[in-house]
Length: 381
Image (cartoon, rainbow, N blue to C red; front, side, top):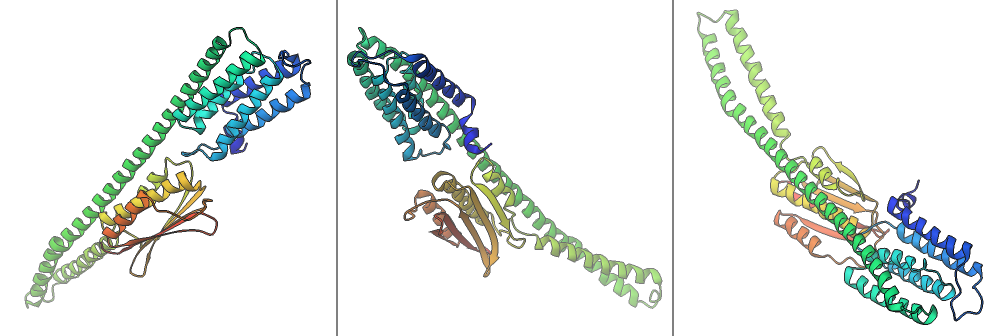
């Protein structure tokens, strides 16, 4: 099943589709009443065409992917649905047709903010009053409109609370991922500091005492009384080997010095369903300080956020490598953006953070419309 079908046939959306089907059954199959201004019922083919057109628009809205900023076409689809509902009410008289306005109200709150949606609902219900009063010629149109308007307001409010709860959950997931990434970075920093401390202790304490031991064994070996003693020679050889082993361990511990960013970056990307993160960090591209690690981590975070909110990207490639005596971070997405890139507060803060650590940032669009970020830092901040 495609992602569109999965979004379309969620339990709530399925309830809306069943509601549409029930209304169509009554209006098209069973036959609706005739408005007083018409002499004969509207052809069933007209009503069926309008009702099916509503379904197509309705399904397009239900199946679209949720984004922080609803696309403009979504609002057009909702307004066209309103137009189709009023066209149906001009051609047929059925108490079930205004239910379609309730379905429209739920969609409207996804396409507009609460205040514009409230203004739209006021206009829609004014139009409904005109239909009730002058097309269907109800004896109490105001009461009928009030009932339908209350259902619309209730449906829109419930949908808005659901949207708010989902956004709050997404924000909490991002904050939690940020905390996990920071914790991973601090843990890596602590481990790196402990490795450095242990390597210094081994070099300064054990190495010093072993060197003293070697000198004493060498002096003992020069004493004529012990010059030919095998145990003395064995102890000297073992001391040499032990000192060489310790120096090798210290060298290896210092070779592993630096912070590893992979766990922190992976934690940052975990709450984002899109884009999919493709991470590549070269073995020698270890970050030398916590300030550098923080700058690179926040750069990746901003790249993820921009790709999810603005580029509508499906994939994000992050590459960290050592190049020309420094560290280079390459972030690229496959979004479909248009127009000139205008750096906002996020990109501006990213640039300032990198420059404070001795590096810089370059931002440009790819040939396909994605965003390409290139950041660089010196090896030592």
